Amino acid sequence: MKNNPNPKGHVIVLPYPAQGHINPLLQFSKLLVRKGLKVTFATTPYTINLIHEPTVSVEPISDGYDEGGFNHAPSLESYIESYRSVGSKTLSELIMKLRHSCAVNCIVYDSMLTWALDVAKQFGIYGAVFLTNAASVCCIYWEMKLGNLVFPLEKWVLPISFPGLPTPLGVSDLPSFVARPDDHKAYLDAIMGIFQTLENNDWVLCNTFQELETQALDGKWPVIPVGPMVPSAYLHQPSSDDTAYGATLWNPISSKSYMTWLGTKPPRSVVYVSFGSMATTTAKQAKEIATGLKASEKKFIWVVKESWDILPEGFISGLDDAGLVVTWCNQLEVLAHPAIGCFVTHCGWNSVLEALSIGVPMVTVAQWSDQPTNAKLVEVVWGVGTRAHKDSDGVLSGKELEKCIREVLDGGKSEDLKRSASKWSESAARALSVGGTSDKNISEFVKILISGKG
Ligand code: UDX
Image (cartoon, rainbow, N blue to C red; front, side, top):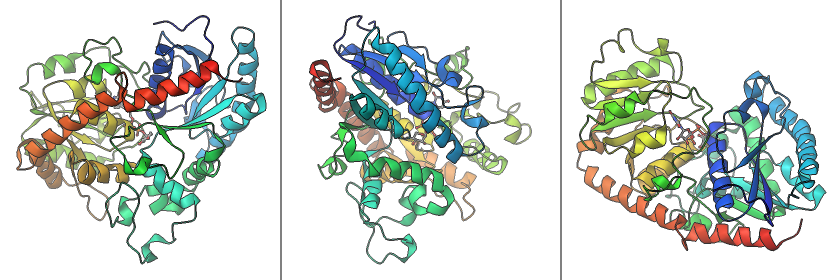
C-alpha cells in the first residue's frame, strides 16, 4: 500500500539512528500508513540510504555528523547534544517544507530524542514518544523519576520490587544504567530526560502488548502498548507481504546460503546465536562460545559481526557441516525457519519480541542496558528461556553454554519452554490482529490524528 496522497493526518516519525531503534519505528510507520495516515520517516543522512520501505516517505534530518553518524562523535554526550541542536533546527525546517504539500500534525519520536517534543510544542502539533524498551523496564525508570529508588542499591534493605517483575529482584537483574549508574551516566541522563517530561506528551507509546506485561501497564503511568513491532508475516500471517522491517544498517548479505543450509536440517535442531547490533564479543568470549557450541553437538548459525580474527584459529575451516558463521543475517527469516530450536540471545528488546512472536525458546546472555531485566522476564515471568550464568569476570563459559543449549533443546524443561513459546506467539499475533489490544490502541491514535489539531 502506498502513502495516501490526500490524508487528513500526517505524522513525522523520528527514530534514533541505530538498528534496534529504526526497526520498531519503521514498523510502526508502516502500520500507520496501512490505517490511512501519511508518514514521513525522518532519519540521518548516514542512515537514510539504508531504508528501503516503499510505503513510507523518507526525508533527511541532521544529527550534525552527516558523514559518519554516531561513530564519528567523540562521546555519547556530544552526539546527543549535537543531535539536539542540529536536529531541532533541521526538524523545524522539514516541518515547514512539508507544510506546502501536506501539513504535519504529529511527531512520533524515539525516546532518546526528547527535544523533538519541544519542536512539536513550538508548532502546536501533537507529540508522541515511542518507548523502545519493555514496559517493565520503563516502570523501573518511572519509579526512579518519582524518587522511589534508594542509591546505592547494594545498601537497599527492602526487597527490590517492581510491577511485573519477580520479587525480590537482584541488583544485577536491573538495567545496567540503574545498577551501575556511574558507568553509564550519559545514557542514564538521556533516559531520565524522557521520564522527567513523560506526562507532557500527548501519547506515550510502548513497543509491547497488554497481555505480555499486564502489571507494568496497569495505569500507574501514562503508557499505551502498541506492539509487538514485528512484521506481520511473522505474526501468524505467513501470506502477508509484510516480510521485513525495511532497513538494514549492517552489511546486508545477498546470498541466502544460510537459508539453503537450514533447509537441510531437521525441525528444531539448530541453535541460532546473535548478540544484536550494539554489543561486542571479545576473543576470550568467542573462544568459550565456540567451545560450548562444539560440545553441545548441535548444528548452529552464529552471527559474528566483529572481525573473525576473534574466533579460535582453525575454527571456521574445521566447521564442515557442524555450523555456519555469518557477519549478519536476516534474523526474522532465520528465527522463523522450522529448523531453529533455540536462540542464544543478548536479550535486546527487539530480539526478545521477535523470538516471542515467532515462538522460539531462548538461552539468555544479557550484556548491558535493559537486557538483564529482559532476561529475567524471559526466564522467570514468561517461561520461554533459560539463563546462562557468567563467571565473576563477566565471561560465559563453554560448559555453561553447552548445558543451557542442551536444557532448551532436549532437557526436562524443553517441552514446557516450547509450550510457553507457542502460547506467547499466539498472544502476540492476537494483539496486532484486527480488534486486538494493540491494534485497537493504534486505531484510536490514528482516529484522533485524522480528526485532530495541527
Ligand atoms: C539495543 C538494545 O539492546 C535494545 O534492548 C533496545 O531496546 C534497542 O537498542 P540491539 O542491541 O541492536 O538494540 O538489539 P535488538 O533490540 O535485539 O535489535 C537488533 C535488531 O537487529 C533486531 O531487530 C534483529 O532482528 C536485527 N538483527 C540482528 C538482524 O536483522 N540480523 C542480525 O544478524 C542481528
